[in-house]
Length: 165
Image (cartoon, rainbow, N blue to C red; front, side):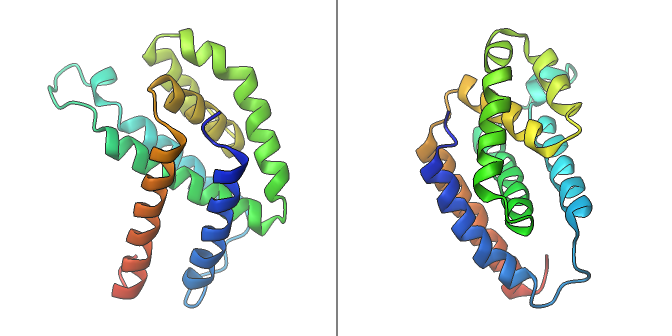
């Protein structure tokens, strides 16, 4: 699985710092339900990046970097949720369990079915498990995800610094 323990621990460490920065001036304090909803919305945004699969009227290609960016948004929200619940290691175990359940079906199914399945996720854990399996199907590497995560993290700090986020 591309979401290794080392990568997850790295993301958790970075997310603690980012969450502390966001929480210096929050609009409100998010609870678990709000964090879960935000993460599920990010799952939908991930699915929307697969234009070649559902936009028969468009010739815009999928953007590999944007897909990784949206995957990292999911990682940001689930890491924040795991930290909030003090269940960092447990969340990785749950994602791995979901990944093991879905990996073969994601690998072998047509893209429309995969994307519909991802979109129907009603728990962020399974959304991440499914998107992780799809990222592997598309040959993303752990290192690509770490780089994309760092870029997204830097973007979030620029937003905080500018006051526009």
